[in-house]
Amino acid sequence: MTDWNASGNVDLVDSHCHLQDGFLRHALEPALIRARAAGVRMMCCNGTHEGDWAYVLGLGRSHPDICVSLGLHPWYVGERGPGWLERLEALVAANPVGVGEIGLDNALPERNDGEQEEVFLAQMSLAARYGRPVTIHCRKAFGRLADLVAAMDERPPFMMLHAYAGSHEMVPVFEKLGFHISICASITRTANRKARTACVRVSPDRLLVESDSPAIAPVGVDFERNEPAYLPMVVEALAELRGEEPGEVAARTAANARLFFRCCEGAAVTAE
Image (cartoon, rainbow, N blue to C red; front, side):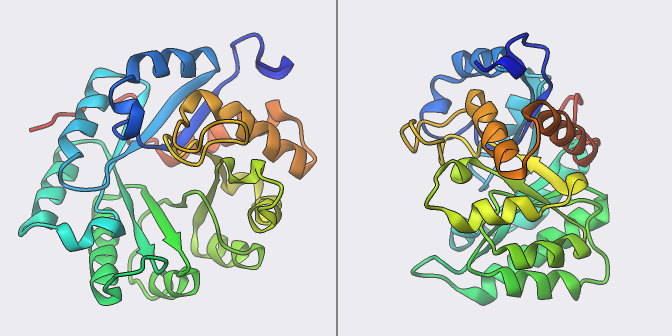
């Protein structure tokens, strides 16, 4: 633990994680204890397919510092069942949750771009209709994503590009469309010049930080053993790259995240 958060009074918000996946599924409570000791006061957990929605809702119900988003990730578009959208809408309508993780992924070796876009736009429309924040995954489709969102008649009130992997030139394009940009531990890798350059370009009021746990661990940690307790390492790397103080970055990103997820934080959810 570094000096800026040694007191334990720091307010950190993990704007994107998957507490239902990997080793965290079976060792969650110790991980939550470590996260809280590291100053992480709120964790935003995203469901990715129909099979984990109920479990993620249960995490939000049993832990007041976990807020929930539910969505169909582009990796699972081909596995969706009949009535998936109606089921998702029923859960969104009945619970104070965000919509996510959704998005476009043109890095998949086998994919159907038309289906991906149809599923993505259906969930974006759902979020806009209910006034919910959206968490978006994007790989190798940033131009197409910008075009699709720009063409929407009505957009969700808050939109996040999580674990941003686009160019620094696209940052102002997405900000103009209303996006927040979330930064993960990929910036701790000095070889990742793209992410390290882009994170400096993000406006202070659009900046978020995340663990994306259990994946994308900071340098020095096994890649798939990431957890929210490592979020201070992301903050420190981000602060160094931006020429700012870690405590300032922590406070600003936490305030941004609380505004982004204001309809979800601290509210009970039901899994019915």
